[in-house]
Length: 310
Image (cartoon, rainbow, N blue to C red; front, side, top):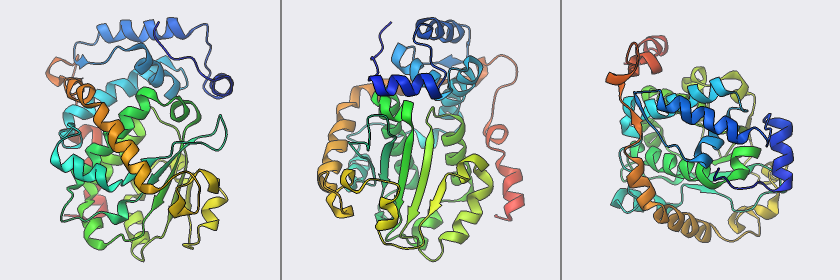
């Protein structure tokens, strides 16, 4: 079995919160591998560490792990627009990486604290950056965290969404279909544990936009959202220790440019992994029973009638 050992702090958290039994890990991984060999429609990774991340993300429920892994590969087939551009050196991906729109912080508050992920999507120029390419880069960063960040998998993550500079032109790119697909993928196909989601520097139209997508978001996730009515960073410091933030946010953990360069290099170092990763997906023509479709998974037509969106 080829998996990383956890720190003593994360191991204690995994046992207490994720139902992890270190003595059963090898058996549980083997069970999922055997199951995968019996799924003719899935072309899936079988790395021990990758499977373990899904087990932890599903609190070691074997059935839930199977469901989530199936969905992870299924959405790559039925929503390919979110995964088409996976080469870190593609010009559009390079531009997004240089801007540092999505930046996981390198330090955590405590050895068993969640990973903080800073998003600055309000700074995006909609005339330059296609929303699907931005989603694709987000999926690449997510895959890296699944693959190598035990902090994120075991302790979860806290998202800090800085909406400074957000415009209606940006928001217009987020159609109901894109919003619903992105939300569903995040909630049903990714083995992550959102602990809190913070929004600040919200534009005046944010509430209207949120009401549009609110129905897509699970209630338990909504309860973990915090809306900061002030742009004063002191309200963020109540949840995220100031010292682990970049200096531009009042912290001492490097600059935004340093963090951007770090993640750009990290994603680039995964180039061969990402190019190889393109082969992993579902082949719906081989799925036992009825093939899954976008309409079935996302239920887009009915949702749009409800939202009165053309």
